[in-house]
Length: 324
Image (tube, rainbow, N blue to C red; front, top):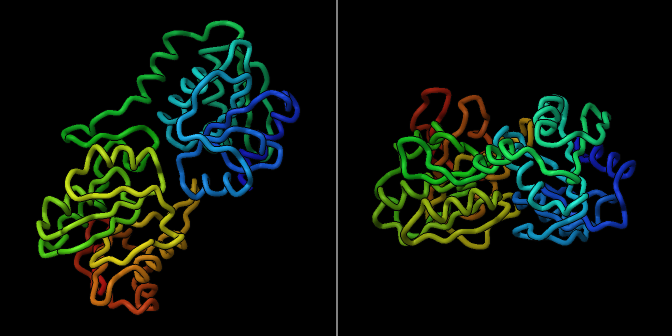
């Protein structure tokens, strides 16, 4: 189990009010927090919360006596999350946040204390949970700066909309850019983009491949998918979906820049699961087009799935592979 989650639950047991309504931002299932209303933008974790019996919300609203916050890993996402948590706090309420020490727990505890006095701090499991209250106004300048971080913005030099916390939120991912160069204009029919993010590859494919009749974007992060809806125009459909669970249909072509991290940890199996799903979801004679870090051993996995991989390019630490 996530050590930061365990530390958050410990802090809540020691200092929280189990009878008070809870809202949990960045929720993950835990027996002590099962009564919380949960917000979780990542589909696999949201599915786990649902399976555990937690009440889910797409958009947290209202005022709550207790707000729990389990942040992601980007600085902007964490600070923006502090402002969001504040806006959900009822007068006299309490916000409890938990982070791993290696994720900067002490630094973010200090940042939060700039806005409101700390109530307590709990260290356990190489993590730290810390809390502030809402008995007096928070520092207005800190809140304004954090709220600004949460606003959608354009990637510099482009018309692509992004928000903090999504993959490649400040630039076009160089691996995806390389794959875009090698997408054949002759692609046609129905296409899937697995792990579509904020929509770069789908945008390029629809502009470069005029015989594509539809592209389905599958993305596990609802925040990235909301950006993709703004960045991709044309015959596109958008799916908040865990690719590792399989796809609902078959496709003529599949595009992917598969992830290979789960949280802070490298997870080659995640990328391999994407490729397994792709192989099962291609029509006969269909093609897979992917980019990966050059050291990742995907070719052998593709061959084991019955595909014939071919290396198209290898540069800048990346490789582009097509497989039929």
